[in-house]
Length: 319
Image (cartoon, rainbow, N blue to C red):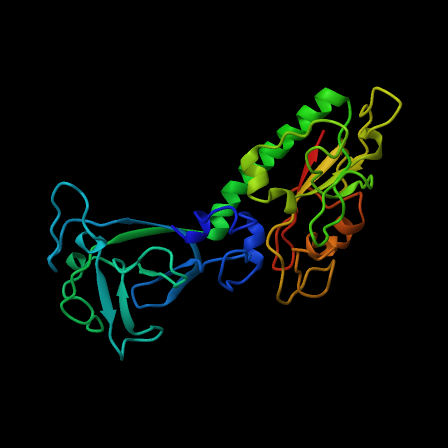
């Protein structure tokens, strides 16, 4: 597992997709304190340099001094192997030594795992593998992007549940937080209707986000828009006539939750900015939302708008 997923909260402010918009620079307090894991194919070609979790089925002992006896307190080399891709291997390839058993505790190093066929399935093994070639690790991996996709679904449901509970208690929805700024501020005090999620305790009513959601910095990730007909007012009841549309659909919503996705930092750039996006501390929603309509709406883009190289916004209407 990448050290980025287990580092203490004091070392990592945002365990959410904002990490995917930043490169590793090293050290606690940075956006990405440790490198992600790396996985290469059978000839050393990089499959992913942004791996969150590697799961390895070690297979039976293949020699190389591997012994396994109770209690199970052996070093990784009792279970996992490595191999050498020799110089002169057919292109594309990256010659070198690759050893799945060589990982250590978090050290800031780029840990590399190799996904290769078992030596017992190759008769004879390719000539570009140095001998002895004894290898039977079976590897699968989860990229950081895939990991955060699952975590985002959990976080989004928690946010929607929190907003629903607020509305049940108050008869209306909260204002959004302020625009993204440095430091990130998310108070309802400015009565914004498009911005970050409102922070707990700032909206005249209880907003009880789960502790894990706050600790992982999801309040710095989601963008929230609320209809003027469903916010605090002397008139009651509220939210009877939703007014926000997504695209040209007839259905209207009281609010919309945006998942802005990974910042788009290379051409083609997002239409909303026309330059690399840098969401953390930017002060601009153009670093989060990718289209002119989402930046200026409502109406916002249609739910389910296809993702492209310069657009990864996802919109979720709140009735």
